[in-house]
Image (cartoon, rainbow, N blue to C red; front, side, top):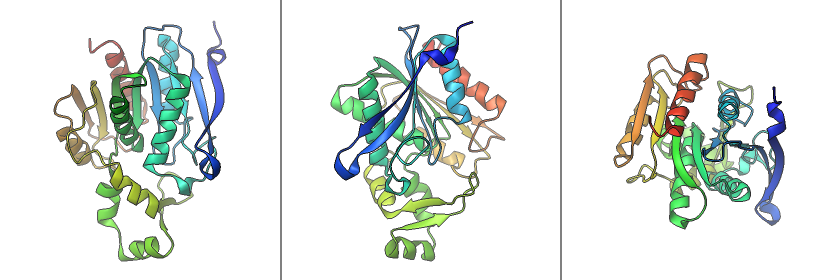
Length: 268
């Protein structure tokens, strides 16, 4: 049996210049079946490329012989940079740089939570520049596009607004980590510039959304609203009645794998 770890290259690239420079850690699984699209993991807010779903995506790629790219945004996991400096534009720039560096021909974007927003913005930027890889499809897991303006700003307390004004950030207890979530004024302001649910989102590819109806962080109604902005695409929405935000249970992982294989097989 071949040792699958031998097919994975670990490297870092530098994105940005001067004080904005940060090292981005990448795990790149080389394809043995070149005709298949490369799977690209786009993680969520404060998650990293060693999470359950990211590893399962990579394992599926290994089984199929497809390429797989995982990386950590700046301020996340094995990458450099400060988390508090992070914005959607900054993390999008890093995703673009990773793809430009590795230069896959066709990609299937797998975006979890905030990564769903990055995936949609990435597809927009690829279409705008008319360069980079062909986006063959997307699997969006509990996608959170526009979460700063749609899910955070409308619910800010007076105290949180004061902290944003006085300190430039506020903290909020995390259900997934002993460390609090940090939301900066820069993140919120930049989020408004990266909104995608303010018009038709042209992805140019099939999209499969997996959404838990018991998700306490991204309500399933948010996925329904996203569907309204994807009217011209081949979009499938799977609602999981008892699914939470992570969707990392064995049955949820099976749904993700099936969605990926369906897109890889061209919907057959």
